[in-house]
Length: 371
Image (cartoon, rainbow, N blue to C red; front, side, top):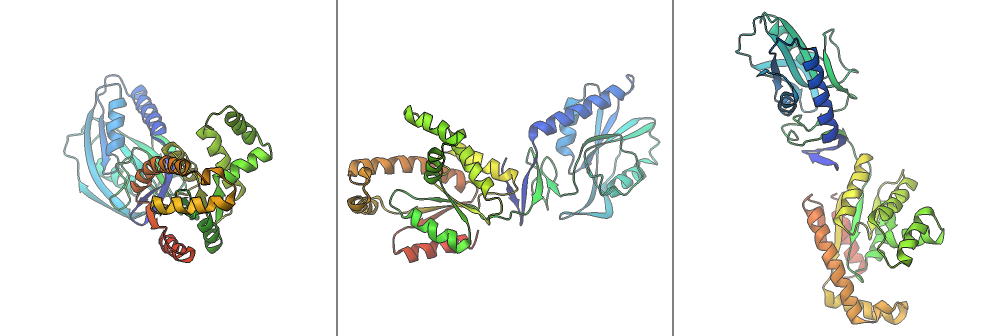
């Protein structure tokens, strides 16, 4: 689960699909246990928000039942309105029936009050209310609620039937409104593209923390941290360092700079699993990757740059053209996967990496300013 954007607002993961499933089954079992065995209840869902909850609840209910719906409206944007409109009423004869109302969320109680008003004239045997979510901080009515799935804070949520101006109902999880405070960038580029040079300019220009995977590895190994020793063990044996070790190093760097305006991630992620782990980690903090900025330079130009650099860098892999092109092959393979991953989120930005340092910095900053 990562941060999602609906219209102009951002929402962070809040309640997982697994937790929702457990809550729904618990509630269905509780209602079944307390229902007289000779009773066939009628479950009445409050549309539109409860359609997913009602469907899952009814499937989880272990006895016979009937189903109906009533459509009410009390939300405008992210605010609950006291003005509840009954859009579609109930047509069934409910005389001497046990009715269980299924609500997605109860906050101020305005909708609940209208529900009681509607059913007061229906001559029901008994009326019970089951709500998946309840906001006790803002509940203003002295009305009974028989079954509560989960108490939550008074923050706007979407997903699992709940929406923000029409969007978000289809997500199987619940997301909570958040306001990201950081600008986090993944900076990518093939060997010789000038990524390190640009990172240094950009971190000062935007007051961001530059996290280079290579620097992080060298620091941890040199200082013999627990993660550094573990990474060295894999490297000494000629094995790739597992994603979990790399990710934990990056997490530690982020935690060290909790008050930062944001981060430039350089050399990370390199795989989709790393990208997903980074998204999950940032989402837990109510943050996200704003964009992947990739410097794009023709391979022949890069080969010339690296061969020239190899004359003074002392790096043997900068003096052998075959080795250089193998590095490009590896980069292109990994970048293609990550490009697809971030492009699917609308977060991939390819930048022309040919020109002076100042020209390239300007191109990147034009993208940064829009993120």
